[in-house]
Image (cartoon, rainbow, N blue to C red; front, side):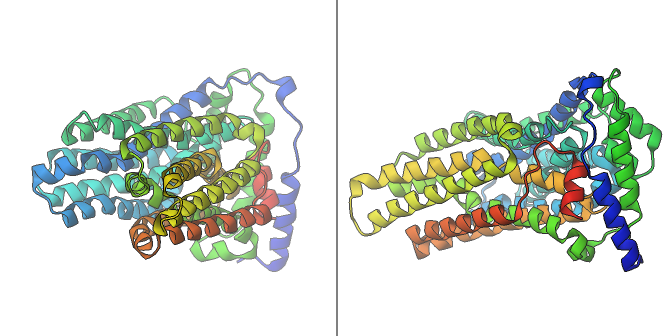
Length: 470
């Protein structure tokens, strides 16, 4: 174990290497084609994630009828996805560290492929649940590895936008599954989930591994080859390569981090930020509102089908705009604007249900509910949906990225399960009180962002991590 003096010396070195480096723009010509191709391949995993998440909604009545499932059996089929994702979240960090980012993506794709085939051939509840659990595991791994892989290959000027593409493709996958699920049988819809998996598996043969992971495991020739392939043959990679290697060599002098080591003072701030943002994202009510959008619209007296279509389209459009502006506007401003919109959306929806409960101004209740829900999802898509994943992929030093990333991703999936599980119970307690609770949580999230979350726009991963973990 390192002595206190050694720790202080190492911290000083980390601070020094985190200092801004001389800009390379003037003396090198970067070609980002391979970065874009690698990102496209990686976000096929995000689309597969969305396909898994969106599968159960349009297929419920058909699967129950064809396989003669009770409501409880179908509910197990729907909810077991989240448990598989929690298992995948725990495994995602160690897998990405041991097998590499590409190796973890391949394993995740294999689980999704097996899961979809099990669902397609299912003749009863058991293979159906096994398949759903397997796709959930793949989702849990994708949710961590995809943004980390993109963040580690992208130049700092593109990192935010390319990492935000992860959330955009998740939303797109959900919306596509929801829409084509209305015209395809549930078995054929399961087969369509194999398409992004196939593209991802083939694409991984043509893109390089994360240079930072290669440097971490000591493959220096492969590291330089991967970095040069990503930046283009005419780019000067010397300064970026030196910064990455020097930072990793410094981190390698520290003891290998385990789960309990994450709570040391050295790492506490980055872990608090990563886990805290996942709490802000999930505990503000997104999965309860997302899973039960139709019933919310019906309860408010608005046509559920129209509301759901508007919801799906709005989510994709705003998430796409977020990807375009995240590197210009910055991470923190988007989070704060998003949080404010979430609070207002929850308050409008709470007022709607309050009016309906006490039969006051009933003609205004549906409009308030629709406005509140659509403002909520637009605000979530504008920042809170994608930005926590972007920041999580940026702030953890590579020696704790596996353990810390698993913890943050597990927190996210636990929150997703808890909110979706408790939502109907809260509504039965008090419809307007439920949204007041979510408004209070989102307000607390704004305060957390103001106090704890740094701006990471325009800085290298090494500079960000050195500043936070000094």
